[in-house]
Length: 325
Image (cartoon, rainbow, N blue to C red; front, side):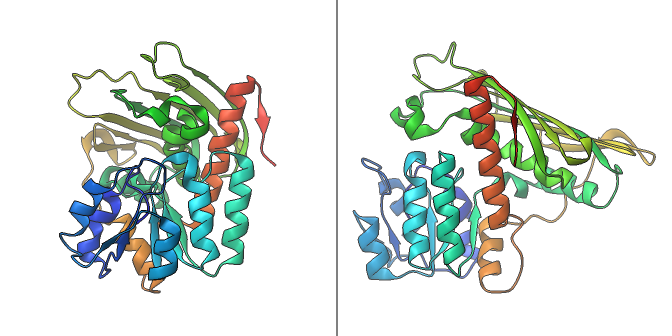
């Protein structure tokens, strides 16, 4: 495991059920502390070693799989180092902070014979997975419109969040989940995006945008809107408030407050739907490597969402409509 900044919880919660051994941990960014990560890992992998340099760790241990969860500005170079050694990669998102870096990661992946997935773990949240299964099973007909919300508490973010070159921006970091939902639920391709974002009232967080909005047009004239903010009050019971509304030709499905509501000819939209069986993204990824299953997040999904989020950020920076190739 390289880095402790990202969503390492996806790994730690699935390790006991995945028949894997964590053999080493190291920082992936300057000044990144890994003491907390190591203390958790050694509970189920007591032989785990601590390294100060991830290059040395990869060369000495030659692992089958590496988890990359360092600070965002270093993700691309660490992922490329792992791919160049033909190591499977489970990585924090976005896998790159620039389109040029993303091309480099994709090139390294194309030359390696390994599996790769980004940490789009919200696909595996029971509410979102249940809603997706309903859409996939035709319960709302053909998707025509999607609206999504990502709302977080700001708190006191680490120093690297305060610089665009190390954080990457709020649309690629927070908004990318909703970008992924749009593609995943609709099954369509992105055609264009117009976005905006603002740093006003960010409580001294430098370059960090605390509000953003994106409008995507997709193939088959599907429209999607995403709002992102860091204005969730500290008094709120939960850190985040993720919502999704998907409108189809035969009904509407909504994810809100951790529940799923379906409105169609057979459902009145008042009762929360029962959840599908719970799954784990890391466990699924390990099973895919072993040829025993399929992770819901593919390498192509990972690259596609990253590029869409980076183009949305560019649209906001330049205040103009951008078209996808």
